Structures are given as C-alpha cells and as structure tokens.
Image (cartoon, one colour):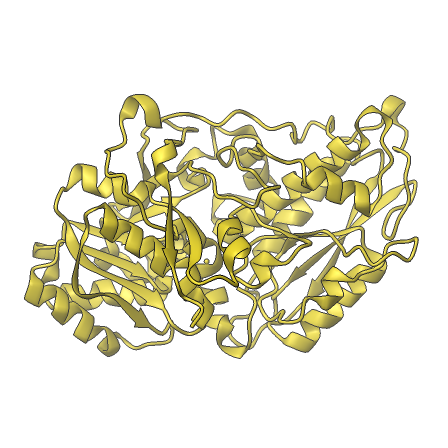
Length: 471
C-alpha cells in the first residue's frame, strides 16, 4: 500500500504499500455476489518459468546486445532496499533474499539471455540521501532495478534521466515491489499493482480511481446488510489515494458507514487512540470493521474491540494483505482470530506446495517462514524481469535497456507462473483476480476460492470511482 519522507517508515514497516493497493481503491454500482462457478478461475501460467528457457540464447550463447550493466557474460541488476534502518533493522532484507534466490536458481539453469545474473545490493536505509546514492550507482553500473523496496525516494529525476551506454537519457527500468503515488506514476517504474487510472487523471478534478473489491463482494454475499467503519493510515497524506476510494467502493456496494465511516489513524498510535473508533462501533452495533492503517494498528483495534466487547456483534473483521504475515498472528494472538484479508497473489502459507515456482522460492530461502508479502512482490518482479528479457531477445533480438522497456510495455497478461492473476503491466492496471484468506485457529487459511492455485477473477471485482483526494 509509498515513496515519501521521514514518517513514511510507518507505512514501509507495515507492508502497507502492497496492502493498500490490494485492498482496492474505488467504487462500484455492482452488488452481485461472486459465484463459485465463475470465480474460481485459475490464471494461465506465464512464460517466465525457472527452467532456463526464458531469455535463453540459441545454442547456449549470449543473446546479442550490450548496455550499462550488460556484457557478453553478465547481466547486473540492482536490488535497492531499506535494510538497516533505525526503525527496524533488516526491514526489507527478505526482499533482497528473494531476488538473490531467484538469481541463483536462474544461474543454476544456464543464466538469463546466456549470461550470469549478478545482483548488486544497495541499502537505501530509509534515508533520502542514501536512496539517491543507490539509484545513481544503479544508473551507472546496472542494467535494471529489480524488486526495489526503497521508501525514502522523493526525487525521481535520477531514475528518469539515467543514461544508457549510448548516452541517451532514457531512464533505468525500475521493477518496484511496491509504491504509492507519485512514485507509482513514475514513467520508468513498473508495479504489479498499478494505479494507472489515477496517474492518468492526477491533475484533474475529480480523479479516477480503480479498486479490486473482491473482498467486499465476498463479505456482502455471506453477511448481507453489513455496517461499520474503516480505518486508514494518515501518516502520509498520499495514502488516502490508495485507501479511501476502495472504502467508498465498499460503502457503495452496501456496507453502510457508521459514524463518519472512514477514520484516519497513525501507524504509531497507541491502543487508547482507537477507543473513540470502537466506541462509535459499539454505539451503532457495528457488524463490520476494517483495519487498513497498519498491521500493528489493526491488532490494537482488535484488542480494543475485544476489551469493549465488540466481538459479540461484529461479523466481519477485515484487513488488507499487510496483515497476511506470521508476525501479525504472533503479535495479535487470539485477538485477531477470524480476521479476513484480501490477497492479489496466491496465499503462500497454504499454496506454496502446489505451485512449483512458489515452492522453488520457499525452498531456496530455507522455508515458508522466511518469506512475506513484500518478499513475494520482489520475487514476482524478478520473474517479470526474466519474462521481459526473454521477450526482448526472442527471435534474435538485441538486448539493451530500450529493448527491455519495449518488452515491459508489451507485458499485457503477466501471471508470474500463476502466482498472480493475469495482469496488464504495460497499462499499469489492476487485475480483477483475488483470494480471500482468514485467520483460523491461529493460522492463515485460504477460504475463497477454496481450491488451491485459483483466484476469483470476476470482472465485477474491478470498479471505478471519481473522487477528489488531491487536497
């Protein structure tokens, strides 16, 4: 649910960047319930696989092409991540681990485009100056940036004007794990969870937003006439862009707002700060509560609700994908039992054994507990990079940064070997595909669709809404 200044750490630490986009950003007039017959569509495999075929050159030789970070034997990529930070040591180390694991697997099977993949890790430290220095180094030494999780980037000029080997300022391809506007609207940045409709209308009044409301449709289909509150993070103003429109979509669908409906809250807020919100829920007999600020904030909301006796009335407690993490279970304990979360990728805690590409990552990093949603996003970026390189060198194509840009701009149905639903990366749009997970007996379980390796891909999951949030 991302690239801003000092207080952005609250979002970064809580995985809200991936989360907020997954939670949806829009409104809809559709209120139809998802049906099991139409919603359990599995995404078709992509061509990115880890079998060494993608990007392989004829007869094992290197595909033609040179550029910054690209020689006849190596292809260098930058993994720029906030790792050693004052807020949380090792914050996005798992993102780095995922990219390195992918590179090791690719190299073990012959490399990419006939070349060995070299990962240059740069710790952006959640610091604007360190981040800028990392980007400058990547521009000078690397072919592309892959799986980026650098949350203090506020100046995009070094990305956008990075020169290729010919001296042309075409930019450096940046496959980012997550990002909020304006970062997610940057012209050389590619995100799986795109906000293209907002980016295209950012200077208009109102703006157009798109959201995946598969979760709200699911909740309404099982518990009609829900009413309650949504909580969102207000540490960074731009977060509203990826939160409030989706909440309004849920309200438009029929989940009635209690009180003011949408309540801002800091990721660093103490439990007492959530008392007024739970009091609103108690006074209205709310049956719905959505924790969309940070996972820690959601845990405190659930604990305060438990203290106030709200668990007797609330039928749906929901969160975004940031909560889909073992640490959420460990810190929340019994207070978060029953929590739902919307995911736009396979629920890896339960599905990793049935998806070969996901299983390969789990094995490479030493077990399922060594990945989280952010790490998976970086892995998906690496698979996207692999797929785009393969397309760039297909049929004897010459590889360079421009060719990579061209290939990325033709990625219209990317699935990361089934880890995500078919996504139009080129158009920077959301996929309608989603999965609902729930905390049951202290563990995250897939609940909808129930069949492993499937998604609800109903077109009705995507909705649009016009709002003015640029205030």
